[in-house]
Length: 406
Image: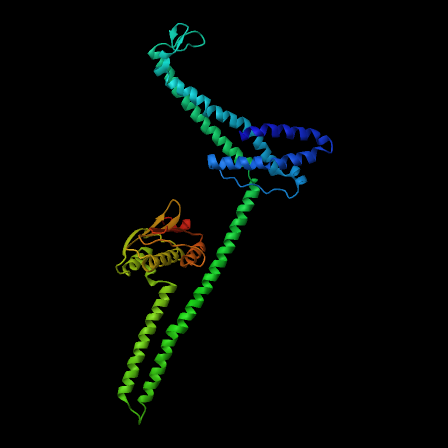
């Protein structure tokens, strides 16, 4: 067993420590600790495979001679030394003791097949034979108790192994905390950059829509009214032409108003003022068959999630519904929205029975959706095998003060 390799490692380290009174000790210890790294990595692999304990390996010294002063290497060596007796005791509890307990539980079935000292069954060390059914049943009860004790002891020994491994085999606590904080800072910097890019893209889209849409329509209105005014000038009265120009200008004005309403909806849908459940209901009602949209919401009317969370949830539902209609050829779409008070998450799930194959890979339409979700520390999980169905789950964190009842 790999754990037993900790015994010769401990002996080698003790020998190297004894040589520290000479100049050979520190280099020898450095070589031993460096050579033991594969053993430490094997321990981490076994813990991850059999116990599900994921332990991040510590940073290794760049030079071999620095290993002798590396705390993480000595901590890993301490675990290798401790794991040998712990693993041996755990093995004894899980295999020999359990087999002995199993044999005791089955003793009423086989005790008559054994003869010892002229009687059926086996005898106790004092000479009392276990040759009757009541005594055999008592042995079985003892076997059940021994099995339960082995299970209890094995569970606690496994917990002790996991705690020891987490404390000695991975990064020191302060290093792990520093690594966690560094990862968090990197994630915040990345999401901030995503938010800035999304804001810049939104501003460019608004400017483009205004320039190419409403602005052009309003310019046409102004030009049409100017020409109508000229057609009605004294001496050049042309009522028919003026009426046609005014009618055309009115049509352009109505079109400009519609484009401005669509632009406002793209910035912040007014229906969200009535709550996310009303906004999702309006979104589902705006889709004409096919597909058929089934909506289920479990959102408390008060307190409501923050406006930013509701807005992102609405746009996620709109984008996913659009994908199901335009690209997945779905006949049925289900939208579920709920606020989980225990986890503090607003969970939005959109399922469709379309052709599948959707992806959040860079360059796809859903990639921007995943980036928008990340700006508030949310996640987008997509399950869309070829042939369908597709399930998209959006999880958005809601601050505690916004989910607690007043």
